[in-house]
Amino acid sequence: MLSFIIRRLLQSLFVMLAVSLIAFSLFRFVGDPIAQMVGQETSIEDQENIRERLGLNDPMPTQYARFVGNLAKGEFGFSYRTRQPVNELILSRLPATLELGAVSLFISLIVGIPAGIYTALKRGFLSNALLVTTLVGISIPTFVIGIFLIYTFGVALGWLPTFGRGETVQLGWWQTNFLTLSGWKALILPGITLGVYQLTLTMRLVRAEMQEVLKTDYIKFATARGINYRSLYLHHAFRNTLVPVITIIGLQLGGIIAFSIVTESVFQWPGMGLLFLDSIRYVDIPVMSVYLVLIALIFVMINLIVDLAYFAIDPRVRHRGGDD
Image 1 (cartoon, one colour):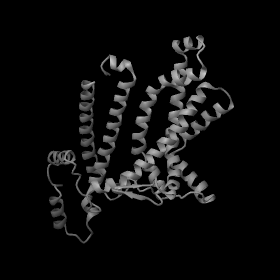
Image 2: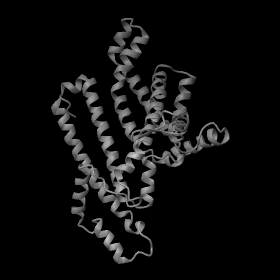
Image 3: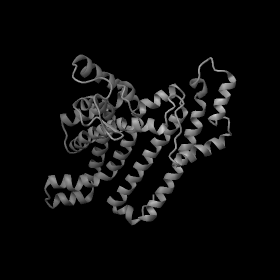
Image 4: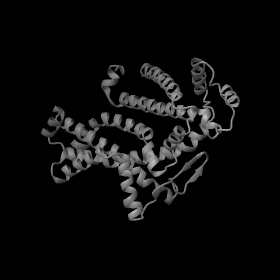
């Protein structure tokens, strides 16, 4: 177990180093941050002084080493646009994105898993209708779904708010939607918009894995022994379907957080995705770089948790020592 964890941690370290290099290099070509920070009346000499003070004239290896060293110490620098510490900006937007992601993941699981089991076990009109509906849902771009929901439930019916977080409650540094009715209403439309695509993936994966498990010999033997169908499907078949489902759940959570940019833009949801878009507009390189590294860290942590869950659930992984 210990050697398995050490190997995964070393792999994660190399991944984070690679992502930090990409983040550092990529955003050096999106524009000149000094031009966005100062006005047209600022002299060339003053611009060069600012560039020197920020270390932008240093050699690239020196800048990268300083960037990685600051990340390791938890020092993310300051935003070129707002002059605020980047960690404060990220922490102020993180709760909104995490809560939206949690609601979206809950919607995808609470609907996708039962729908996947049902379509795997049943044949008929309802099962086919679910499959067709999910196929349509996965084919439509996220922003189109969001605009449709805004028009239907926000403009035409007037039931739900169409932008913003609504009323929130401050719990220390965490600002939450979960303690107010207005906050819950504001979560519904973006949560559904972000969860539709994940719901489709969950349902189809559960359906495919459930059908494969039902074809195995031990399920046939259990059926021949007269085991109750409910027990057979839920306790035996579904339990063995969970291993790939755990993987997709982990990747879904990371994907929801990483790709919430479109949904946050459509609903003006004040999360990290909207912060990233604003940073691109103003060439705010520190915020863009830290955002990309943070998203990579979330994926790495989720994958590590998924690997450990595999190790705990699947005896085959434990038997071969967790080797890939």
